[in-house]
Amino acid sequence: MAEARHQAPEGDAVLTRIGQAVMLHRGGDREEARNRLAALWREIERDGAPFHRCALAHYLADTQDDPLDELIWDLRALAAADGLTGALAPRAFLPSLHLNVAAGHLKLGQEEAARGQLALAREAAGALGEDPYGDGVRAAILRLTLVLEGAVED
Image (cartoon, rainbow, N blue to C red; front, side, top):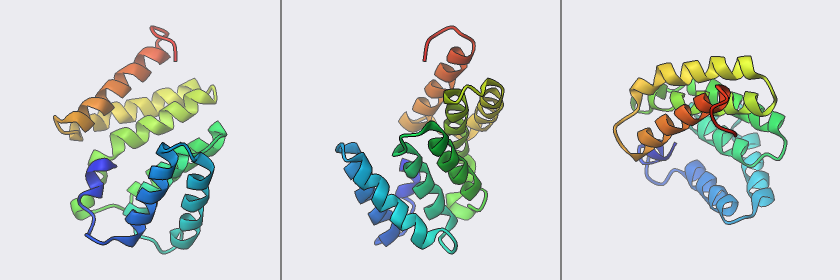
């Protein structure tokens, strides 16, 4: 998601509001971040740009306390990515989005669903660049693979 933020139009008010809420979350105010993101979701849920909905759902997932709620938001982010086209094509987002869904399934004890999403993340990883973001996503895919194989603990 970090790369795409730079591709969004300058002065994008929705992305600015998402960024402000993310800063609150990273600063430790999870509840206020969740409240602001949820309010923004209500504004753009039906008519918002797919990129905005994808980014917003992605960050909303991170603010959830309940693993099922987190998975629901990760699934919404993945669904919104289907509507992305052009410069914001979903190919670079898909590995991370599938990885998040896989991790959510694993948290809920749904290992087969986690394996399926992890396989999709692995398949989509070819779209990742040779950069810190791509390296991080590939490392996370490997780590979750090892967790599912029982080689490391989560």
